[in-house]
Length: 224
Ligand code: CDP
Image (cartoon, rainbow, N blue to C red; front, top):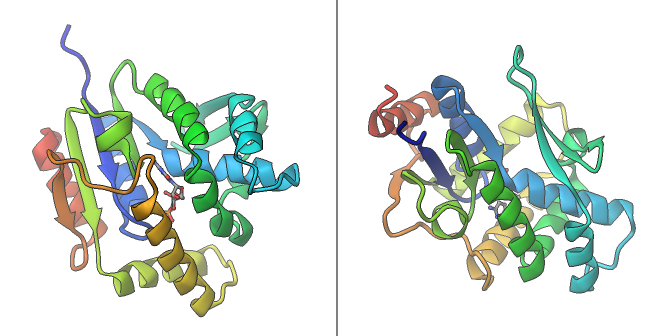
């Protein structure tokens, strides 16, 4: 029986990759895996345990002791991330988590553990996985790889719209600073930096709607 393909989608914050990846997965009936949520989950658990974020060994131990599972609700399509029996999904996009996640994501032993879990999710194929290092590190053999980019002002505007729709209050300047800081940390770290794989198809989403990007991806993957 032919193997079901895996699709890797990488890109910076606000490039639209989560919305796009979720739509592509729904269209193909694949599992959607948001790897950013896993880094956010470790950050949330570290904040909850009042860990010292400078202590890489504590962050690595916390990650190693956490069991990650995805629970997909078939009717609604909603996917929850559970950590050691707790649904952490509602706590992942707070200001505190967004501000600290890039520190956690730069710790090599946090990354190596999460990468192993992510590979397990994809081992039977049929996954649309999004993140920063999926095409380069997590699934270098993915059947299809995409790297989404967009101009910074467009990415910021998209995130503001998203926060407004969730009725989350935010400070524009602070959001701007967080994006620049996270982009820098994600691009410059040694382990699994944000980078397009040499064989990824780069899509500049600055002037494209979500639907247009989804159509482009499905055209390539044969699901259009
Ligand atoms: O939604 P947004 O693009 O803002 O962020 P996210 O995908 O939830 O990822 C949050 C953070 O996790 C990123 O800024 C990275 O620091 C980290 N991350 C990573 O290092 N590697 C991944 N594969 C996914 C996320």
